[in-house]
Amino acid sequence: MSTPNWSNLTFSYSKTNTILRAVYKDGAWSEVESLTDDNLKLSAFAGCLHYAIECFEGLKAFRGKDGKVRIFRPEENAKRLQRSAAYLGIEAPSVEMFVDMCKRVVKENIDFLPPYEVTGASMYIRPTLIGSNPQLGVQSSKEATFLMLCAPVGAYVGGALDAVDVVIARNYDRAAPNGSGSYKVGGNYACSLYSLNMAHKLGYKAVLYLDPRTRVHVDEFNSSNFFGIKGNTYVTPESPSILPSITNKSLETVARHLGMEVERRPVPVEELATFEEVGECGTAVVITPVHKLVDKPTLESEEETVYTYGDGKCGPKSLKLYNYIVSIQKGEIEDPFGWITFVE
Ligand code: PLP
Ligand code: COI
Image (tube, rainbow, N blue to C red; front, side, top):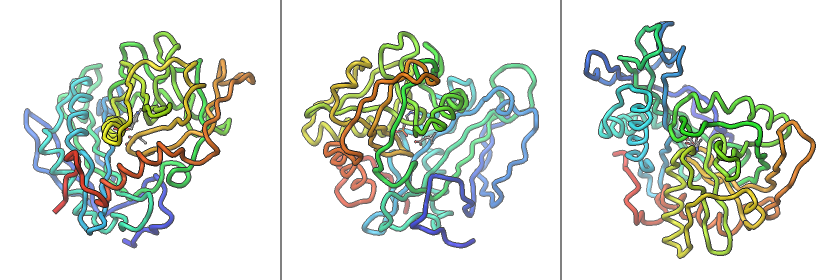
């Protein structure tokens, strides 16, 4: 297989050497197998295909300045997968099994780990858990297949730190009150596609959803959390319907470490006018600064209120947070928080 073109990486599928698979059946996990073919043989009656009995994770591995390979906070992803699996009523791997498989998939695909020098590039790891036994009734699957996949990636949209325009969907939700919004289940993403496709047609890179109960507060984007910066304060929404982002939690810690105030609380829509910087945060997007945030009564309407942040470049506070977290991930500074797992 040829080496990827490192300077042209996007956030997209590419074939690597191997994927890993383990199957939970009759009360036990199988040995982990390494497969060179990423096409699965699966019953057409598998629960994941009919009732979206599926959850997944996303995390990254980096080649450090010292040549060492680092994975960012894999235990946190392992625990979040367990929480999603419990919601779906299926078996999840232990934290140890999850972390071991992360390390192994990186090792087996080390030729696809971008070099340290390539800005914004990393190896994206995609742990995926599916209900895999044949079934017809709506019930949690008895058997589960756990896959550990990876691919070299660049920035989620455009180049690293390119600012984007986003739109508020007042007439669409990604989650229901008391629904699945805080779990990383595939169904949440399917549910956001209609409004996301419409937003893309209108020229926006992402949709910002409001809290589905009252539509008074900001929730999150399709595939990232929201943050705003006001003076020396990092503000991010508290809401029961958003995914607990590991990046966001890490940014809160970094912000405090760098002497900023942190507020996690409901964020009313009107407050959008008062932020100096706004961004998306998450594993795939890292920090993606928002330039224009457009609020429409409905996505289909012509009417709009536009909030503009900065001049199209990443604001200074967001940049400082981005640089700090990326420096830990790439081994340029000490990791004061114990967030790194080395792949030996
Ligand atoms: N919110 C949603 C809906 C996501 O899909 C993601 C991506 O994982 C995030 C937030 C960010 O979470 P994390 O920082 O753990 O990747
Ligand atoms: C991630 O940031 O890891 C995600 O899972 C987002 C993905 C849906 C693109």
